[in-house]
Image (spheres, rainbow, N blue to C red):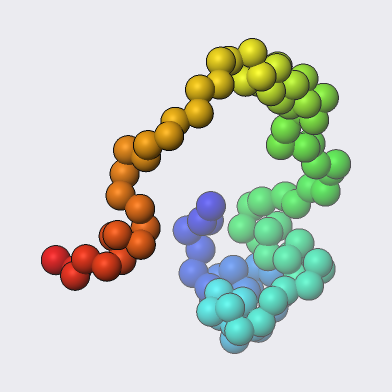
Length: 97
């Protein structure tokens, strides 16, 4: 998200030297917590630290995995003697097109 402020104005509002803000933007320096908080506030943003929710419900994912594996075990297994594609050694022996 961008605030529409110039680096100079953002630096002035945050109470930081413009050269330091430029170094953050260029990636040659990383702001500490205090500087990051001041920059966010200067840009009209608020930083919040809160517990992170896991991206996946492990209990539900585990139940689904068990269901999928049980379904896979119930499927008939028919080994195939012949391959439907050329063997790797045959493919490597042919010159590239």
